[in-house]
Image (cartoon, rainbow, N blue to C red; front, top):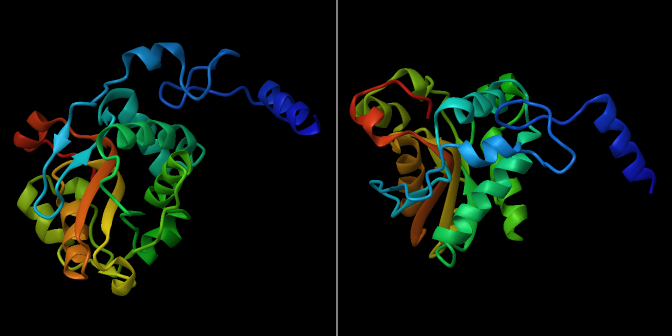
Length: 229
């Protein structure tokens, strides 16, 4: 009872806002307002192929309020968004990737960027998603090189070269002959996911499938529009 009282008191002092548009939520709403629930740029039919992963799925397109929300999550300490994101991503995974993986992991930050940011947003997303799925996310990769951000590189070949050799598998024996689900917040060209998948396969994984919260629209990628990765 005390927990419910204090939770209600906090809601009065700090009314909850929509994860995407930041408007105050009604009592019947949780994480997402009714308007965003209807109007978000859903990408359920978006399936991305990669060089080393068989499939990547995402529930949303990286545009509008979704883009603004993810940028707050990544750079403005909006870590509480992970709960909402995890629910959405878990539903997408259950629908499209059920039975295709043994372990869940994420695309890690470098130590330098983790120290600067204070948290790894992909790890938070993966853990929240795994919790919704009734599973556990494992730390299978580490980023050994602090490379320039992918968002400013544009072209696929530049992104691919930028991440080459930047990741290592922590325990090859653990993933041998296992199917891996690799999670990230955003997928654009798929270069980062492909490099991580390549390292997992080289270390003995049987296969890699991927999931991201949001995907860049294919036409923008083809036109070379700079996007975050």
